[in-house]
Image (cartoon, rainbow, N blue to C red; front, top):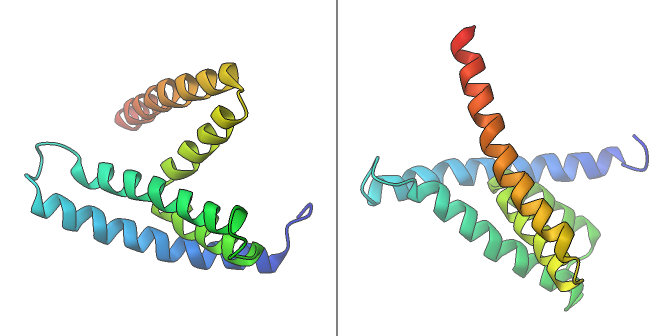
Length: 130
């Protein structure tokens, strides 16, 4: 698999199962507490919590050296990747910002948000045609 081991895939997959399950529970719990249908509080909560947690996980790994590569894969890619991909988006943009790659930062933000919205709309419209 071009440098990726089966063990790494298994670690990420197990973390993804946990993260996706947590997203489902947290999202529905938050939506039930806050005015359901008024605003997507559940999605906002998991996205913002994921951003906070990926910063913590990467910081514990990079800055403190407390997490080895397997734990980083499990937590950052697996659990938080399953919990929300927005956390990866935020951290990648933080990396571009801290390395002063402002053009790439702006392009990444604009393209991912705009194209993401457009593709969600196209997919939704496409489903209506089927």
